[in-house]
Each structure stands twice: as C-alpha cells, then as structure tokens.
Image (tube, rainbow, N blue to C red; front, side, top):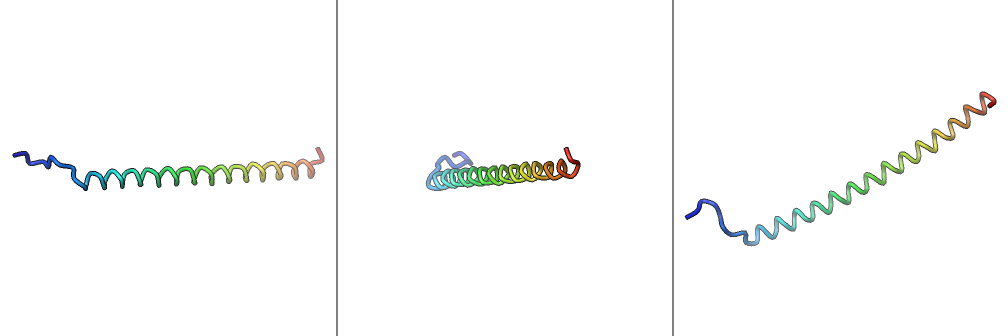
Length: 61
C-alpha cells in the first residue's frame, strides 16, 4: 500500500478552480496596475510639457 494518496477526489477539482480563480484575479490586478501606471505616466508627461512651456516663456525663447 502506497503512503501517498492515489485519488484526487473533490479536493483536486477545488484546488484547480481556486488556482484558476487566483490566476484570473492576479491578471485583473496586473492589468489594473498597468492602466494606473500609464495614467500616471501620461499625467507626468503632460505636466512636464506644461512646465517646459512655462520655463520657455520665462526665458523668452
């Protein structure tokens, strides 16, 4: 008799569903963070562009 269980039973199905659900949640969270990072990068680029315009006006270029 083997010391290891030879059946997967419901525990195997539940753990597979849990793994699938966790992977979906991780993918969603990753996509959400990517969108937030892109929003921040666009904001900073716009801010830098406006700040550059202000400096150019002050210098008189």
